Length: 182
Image (tube, rainbow, N blue to C red; front, side):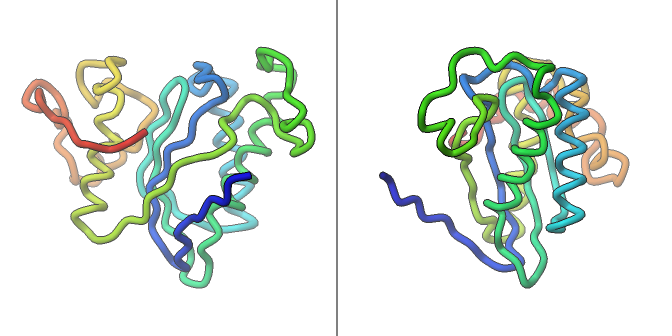
């Protein structure tokens, strides 16, 4: 069994990539969006965190969370979010195949990939680069031609705050490419 080590820093800011099991395109369905929103709200009540940036794509999501000063346990939070989501959509979304013995033993569904990818945000430049990456991701994946056209993103919140112009990530961003692993 692999021994994964994660960088855990109390009060840290983290970038995450979380995918669905089998890369199933379920996350932008209305029932999925509602269940994910509820699961996040329920988790935040028990274990607070701030969502700094977010994008929801059909089969994966990217986000940045800030954790409280005395807490660095993002793994437990993601476990709660995934479990809460799975309970809410059970019966609404077909699992798409048999559960493996390992998934049954760990009481997991096949809705989510077992693991997720995280990156500790190091400084303000790193934060801005990751926020840009998050918001540009729907264009990168060919889902829209302009960032403003993707509804499942905090980009619109950033525009309202005057951080981005509304046309950011449009035609003038051709060639925009950053080397981030998904």
